[in-house]
Image (cartoon, rainbow, N blue to C red; front, side, top):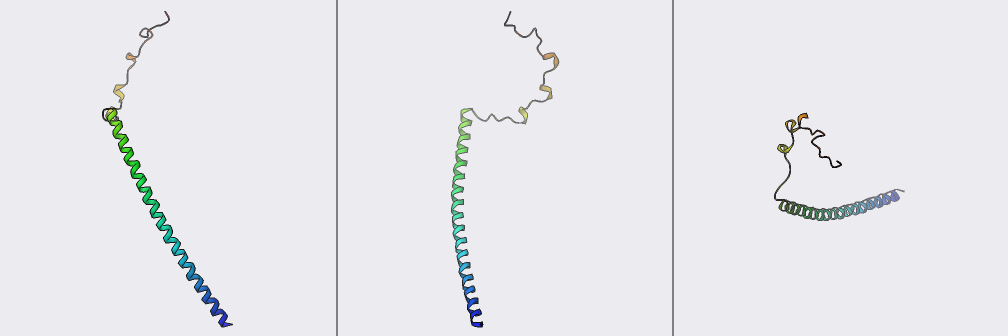
Length: 97
């Protein structure tokens, strides 16, 4: 009876070692594949970044520099027209006379 228990214990130990080896092998394989995919992704992102920079340069050249508005370009309360500057009906041209 003890011989069978010892034999079963040895088989279980052997199976556990085999499974452990297999799991570690798969983990290493997955890690290698993941590193490859990340390297490919890094290259693609770099090419997209480069293309974006070229596009920005082309837009700048076509429009003669940057035309991005800053806080200084925003209208303030002093830029709003008053009631005296609003057109009246006399100032509007009539096309149906």
